[in-house]
Figure 1 (cartoon, rainbow, N blue to C red):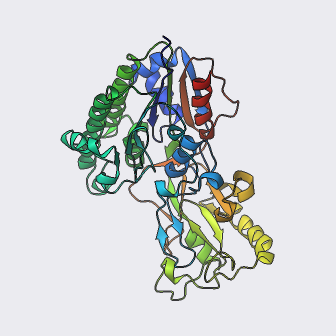
Figure 2 (figure 1 turned 120 degrees about the vertical axis):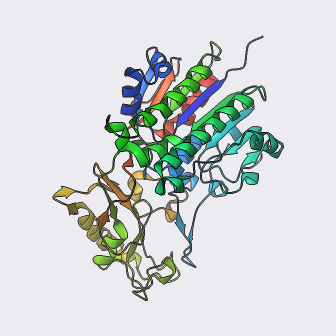
Figure 3 (figure 1 turned 30 degrees about the vertical axis):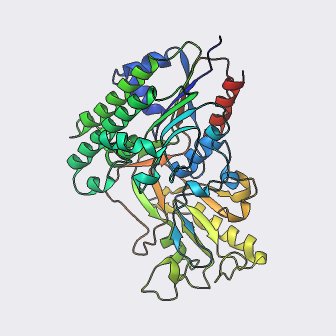
Length: 424
């Protein structure tokens, strides 16, 4: 009797192609290096914007944001102007595991909270709030609690003490590994997907520790990847000959030089106004506002037909967009160009949800991290983070199969790769 085709997926949130290549060849990730030697290993383009909620939603559905409905970590209610955080209930496209006939074990995929019934196991990734709404089937809860399972690293500790942050990072990783080991034999599965998200947290706080061999936490940084590589080797050793093995990231990473506050710029140039200048809140946006930004750099025109207090007519759209394009493309800090590309919505999105899409999306030049905080004190600055997301250098590692890959590989292709293999 022919064995069922199986797919094994390991996700490394935020890990760039160059880091995997370097740590593998340097002996920090020997198991990964061995897999690379007889597999396809390529850079992969992320979503726009290159944030985890958008990228992972695109990975699991194979759809772009105007089809699946997740454009960023935040959304603004057009009537109340309340800022909310879209979750799994807002996903309008079907994740691949709901289409398959077989059982799936899905661990820690971002933006899958709150979980919903499916054939198999789903443990949601960040942003997860209540563990009781983070696990399906709920009968697994006592086991996970006994394993001290953690939904995410406590990043707040990183703002207080990097030592405390690293302790929590390690404890979260250990619990994630223990959960995978328990669930590996939990059911006769068709897809097993395990995502590590502590990598993203680590690189935000300590990208400089990766680049600087003399950094206080350089060995801690490398050790985190050594431990993950151990899991990769352990899983790989359990594969059947006909299994498809995939490992990939959702976006890349690089050194952060400066955060740039887009709403400060829009306010300074008269596009964003507040009814009471002393209250710079979303609910206090003035009717005369022409445009505002939502994280990380999504620009929305304040249209009459879209927002309760909107004042922009459709006839004014083109002139405002041209003015904004000129503003963003000319922006420099210390003689360095800040914005690499200004995209209009119809250049990057297509689908039934186009009306809710941002009118412009900005992609930054190297080292600049675009933020939409209502920080009206300064154009740019630097907090504790030393690393930032990038668009072009996610990675895909694929054990050799007959599966063909597109030339311009992106996160939108992952679902098709899975289905192409399962249907072969």
